[in-house]
Amino acid sequence: MRFHDRRRAGRRLAGPLCELQRAGELENPLVLALPRGGVPVGDEVARALDAPLDVLVARKIGAPFNEELGVGAVAGEGPPLFDERSLALLGLTAGRLASRVERERAEVRRREERYRGGRPAPEVRDRTAVLVDDGLATGVTARAALRAVRARGPARLVLAVPVSSRQAAAALEPEVDRLVCLDRPASFQGVGQWYEDFAQLDDDEVVATLRASAAAR
Image 1 (cartoon, rainbow, N blue to C red):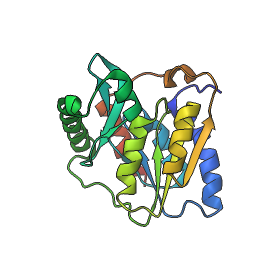
Image 2 (cartoon, helix red, strand yellow):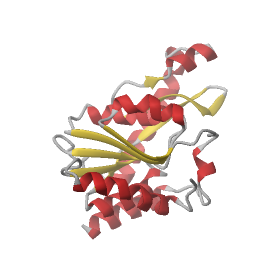
Image 3 (cartoon, rainbow, N blue to C red):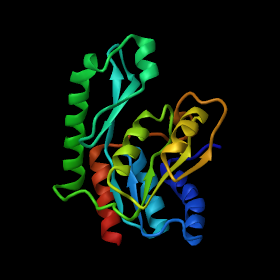
């Protein structure tokens, strides 16, 4: 299954979520998108569910020799989450990555301020929190985000993505009350391979989407 772009993927992802809503499994939903790529997907989902849209900022912690190789992630003010197997295989320790953790935590704070413009994070307690991203490769960033949301006391926690590696989906399923994923292909090199248009977004586009979503409600 390939998607033209993130918005069309979001519209397709909204289908099974709307079915869950009609079945009473998504009461009082709040959509939390992982920026940047998850925001257009989450916007389409929020519109379909008639739910508010906000962001949950999480950042990957890259290996010292390869920033793209995620060995952990940080979200909010909680402790960093590391993939212990990756650390062991690469001969790394949490202490060696402390400076990278603080750098990414600072970026989390910067993005939260930029995207929200000073307004507080939305209340999730006793709501159905629907965390949305454009896809899952390793799932380490999504896991940190899910745990940050779970700590805030939602009534239910749902993870919704258009596509995921089978390993990431299997690892994250125990973290949530419901995982909605349209496709779990056997061969998975990266999220971008499942999109015809996988252009990178910038902060201005995220802010504009959030403002338009709020105005529409």
